[in-house]
Length: 166
Image (cartoon, rainbow, N blue to C red; front, side, top):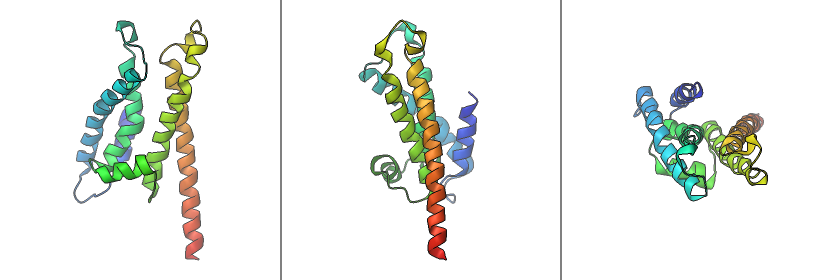
């Protein structure tokens, strides 16, 4: 609840094509990407074996968190530009600092969710291993690792450019 407006407002400020896309339009794209990404992620999680049923109502909340950390930043910055989305998520060839800020945390969140799912089948009796607690913790940990990695990549990239200019 607290992270959603912060991320949407921050990434909307970093939008590309400022002449064609206003700040309000970028915020609107982020708000639209949140539920759209959550639906895609919930369907993917269900296909990969997430439990379905009335007692697992928490699935949409985990999907909203994952959508907020993966889809929303790209939607705010790039909008519907398929070439930018493909460059960032499929080929991972970052050109600018903004690309690192979107790509690495998103990849970290997905990888963290994947690693977070591993302890679930070990012991169903432990409350911390129930669905989706470990996946959510893994998502957040992976996102934070991605943020640190993107900060390091941006720092080293800027440092190398500074050395080349001298």
